[in-house]
Length: 263
Image (cartoon, rainbow, N blue to C red; front, side, top):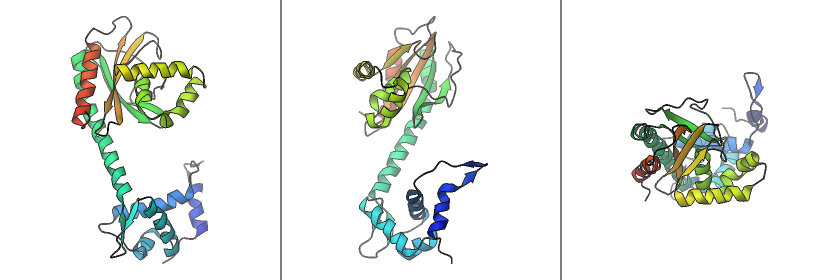
């Protein structure tokens, strides 16, 4: 067996894919995640020696990573057997990911019913590092034709969906993108608008993103009261929203939230 040395590990951040260099990352994190993956794929707790063999890392290096992971509760060691397994933090991450998947699946089903009940085009979007991304788009009985499509990324400050997500996600998550979009200007005005979204539980724009289009969005929460995604209705300025559109939208969002355990 050959133990991977430091020079081998340094190659991880220098790989080229299709002739283009991959984005540089934190090499130690990538190496450490090999240990986490080994524990996740194992059918039982593992010894230090078994982890060393599985990851092709030296026992001393494995021990250093395990010490750090144990302090953060990503990994736990049985005091009796000395074996290692995934820790409480890994479980919390897994539950959080599962809740988000459930939220998206339930929202994808709800958006079709929302389009039918409201007569308007409906969509569901969730947060990504680039901004709110459209996951599903369902035309209503009064279809809307636009350049928006599945996978499109929406602005945080000029779309109803973005305003809902900006209102309910932690500031530390959204502030960098907000500053890029606003160039640091009129942040106080934006905060007033976000406060209004939180009070009303709904965001509405008219022509802010695309001239001639109107949109309104409402948040969907999971069982921990964290934002899971947003449901959005879209129409033209000529058609407008009926008097019951907002009620239909917020009821749909609350129904999904309730299914996810939110009160």
